[in-house]
Image (tube, rainbow, N blue to C red):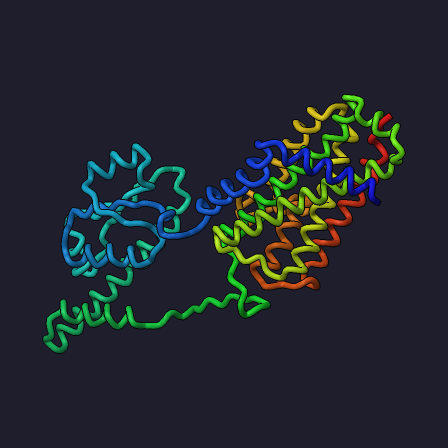
Length: 385
């Protein structure tokens, strides 16, 4: 055991002597988390920008515009026709709404005014915005018709009645309530920043461990492995020392990234013991994958190229870069055959639902199953003589 720990300590020291290792191990995961987490977080700054060209400039047109604003789906800005067209052509906005002259007159006459919505072909929210415009217009027409009828019946001014009706509608409580289901009262809801942090931590830990496992091939290429086998240490002790080093390097990276992301991004990782078991399973799986790839390549350079290609592409499919839910159905099914998917499933259970060890047995079990397969094939194919 002393020889195993000595080999592991030497390899860990060698890894952290390289300055660029700190960038790969810690800098890149935090940078990618910040960029992609902010990109997919649905705050007000990421809403589509829509311009409104109000040629009517009447009370009714202003009411409609306010209704669309209050829906909160898009960011509204007033423009003239020429400016809106130019911004759409330059892709500065996703589209613009055009209200023609005579809009108020048409509404007061209980007609249906024509509203144009011009958008770029790439704007996927066009259908939603069209529905919001139609709903707002119907609400305006109903309010106007009711105010007109009330004015004829009571003689009260229609404008005042419309204002009363609008105030009453605005004060009606929402019919649908949102309930977040968690298993811990203190658990925060998982947002995209948390998901991306877990995902990129997994990706860069896998890249780092894969790079570390390439040391075995490098040792064979340079003859270091043969010289080490001439020492009293057995082959099992040498291999055990390297595997322990890879495991500890992964834990150092994971532990620091989890701590820093909690401090920087206020990410709550959940149950500590459950996280230890999940991360350990993921690290063992990654080490197994590294040996698996090493069994099919001849040099450490080949392992780095093919390994990074496999990890990055599989991370995309597993939901590291973006939520799995936005991908086609067949890709969502394929993602279940990738270790990173189950790692993210485990972190989702712990961070979003406040789960415990019993709630992540399935992800851990699947990761360990991947580990057994990878190690069995890798240990059989890797040759050091």
